[in-house]
Amino acid sequence: MRKLLIVLGVCVAVTVGSSSVAVAGLEEGFAAYKRGDYATALKEFRALASEGDAVATVAQANLGMMYENGHGVTQDYKEAANWYRKAAEQGCARSVRRQTMEPVINTLHDQHQRMFRLLDALESEIDAFDTGNALDFYIIDGILEYIETYPDRFHRPTESSVYQAMRRRLAGAEAAPIERIESEHGGLGAAVRALRNAVDANTRTVMFPRAFLVKKARDVIHGFRRHMTTEEERIFPLAREILSAEELEGIAFRNGGALADDEEEEEQRFDTLYRTIGRQVEIGLGASGT
Image (tube, rainbow, N blue to C red; front, top):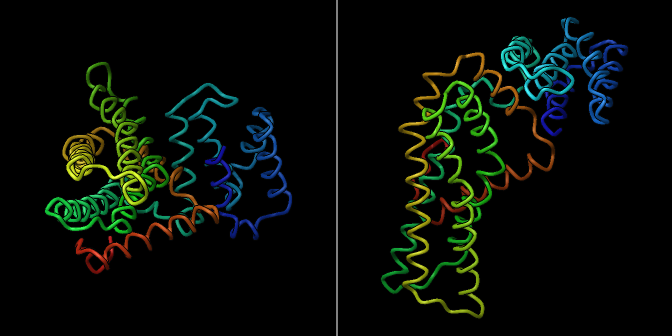
């Protein structure tokens, strides 16, 4: 549901110039979709898809969403990609869509680079702690908060869409590396949470042995580095090889829509957190901060 509502937000500023009848039809389509009346939603979106304005862009994108999910229609990924492509060709989508003109895989790569730098910073702090220095709780907790939470909120939704598209292209054993890399996400998240809880407890009442905390931290660092390196060296190149431009365009459109206010604030908070850590620890932010 959230993806459909985001698409409306993408062109909300431009739909002001559309006819009131068209906007009313779009609103009726959304209302029908929200109550599960996919037949009515489909009828409204189809009627508006040829309007040639911002309303058409929204209608086309939501037709793509309905075909992708099989809502009111037979699930058809090719037809979904067709509608997403039409929506992406509209001027509205190009002008206000957030980040979607950047190649999807490059965006995932850039997010990985931030994670690698934060893992380097964490390793530096843990090495210092292992040699007898005091544990810098605020720096370590900030790093762990980022690598625990940011991927689930802003990285993996797009990454999962890419992997879903890849699985549709691959058969049997060929899809095994995709399934394996996705299965690691839960374990990585659990490991970070366990380390964060242990670090927090160590500042309060429970004093874990230094060697225990060091090992847990190094396990997290190694696990994330291995996971992301596999994605960078094996999975992302394969995605570029087997996915069409239309498929990647559809993924970009679905996952690159305008953020809700609370999401925008949260992403800004993570960006501030990253830069704050960068000021406290040498992690090679560079001029762009990416």
